[in-house]
Length: 199
Length: 291
Image (cartoon, rainbow over the protein chains, first blue to last red):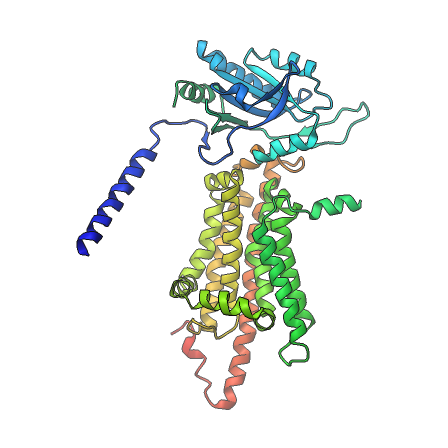
């Protein structure tokens, strides 16, 4: 009996040591690490060429998910510009990354407009949209974010509130990092390089 | 208009557990009311109202669009926890629903579920541990500090399982704590907690809440950037949002201690008066904190 308990104890200790040994993350991340916290990438939308796409079309790439809209006055262009600058420091590795810009204003953001907009930031930028607002809301909800429309002014222009964060997924589509509006280019570049080089 | 109200009342993230527990409690209580009609210990208007407001407010913050707003606005999140941890449980406990609910609970539920679970030594040990007069206030403020730690708050708002654990822990701890302080004075399975000690416990949870609330309200640092990540429910300055949230943590939350202290004080005086004719005026002082 005593020996049994001793063996059990030894196994427990060994397991505990083993687990902590494995779970120790050798990588240092500059951005917020969300590994194991958020849902993997999954969607069914239309890209800026009018093609139906899902998460599987971006398997093998590091995917950066961002919810925005092309009429966005400040947050979206500055965020996308920071991503673009980070990618420009990565050389040929930049092609292993895709920035998925999901419009939360599909009424104004046609596929053509999305294409012109995302192309201006670089070849890795893809515009995604759906006219189905319920689907768009469900996709936002999956990442626990929301969007809302402001009142239109005299010219019919309106603001859209949306998430300011970039959700970063690895090559297998697992949620790994969040880049916030306050994270700078070197931090984003550092973590993207680390993620691309396979971890 | 009707549609807006209706969609507001629908669950944002449906939880069968919350529905079963809340609807079940309400039904048991109503059944108890019907069966206990005419009894001298049947609750009156105020106790019924307190129970109803407590239960409905907790349900509303867990299962209507208030839950959505709580996920996308810091100050509404603080309001949510004020209801789940303080106001809702306090009102439910103050309504002393145990007599009515015992009457209303179906025989099978009492005999085959509640009684065996309650008599289980693990339940008993756990209950005594959580209701220990030192552990209870530490747990009460500890949970507030834990979930308001910026890095922990960040992941709690992003992960649905963690978000649920957060809200459940607040609601359960709220019920346990207020049950200990303003619940039945002599409780099954617990030693009598003196009135003076109850006051001391209330004071012990008030000070940290004032500290945390004031810090959140007055700091110039943005502590909870996760609401920017999730997108706020409507446009509001992040610092304004944080300031209001801090004030809610600071003032109404700590005021609850004052309200509860008044209740304890009233019971203390009543018990002294009840004791006097019996000729044992010193009996109450035995439990006073000065000892």
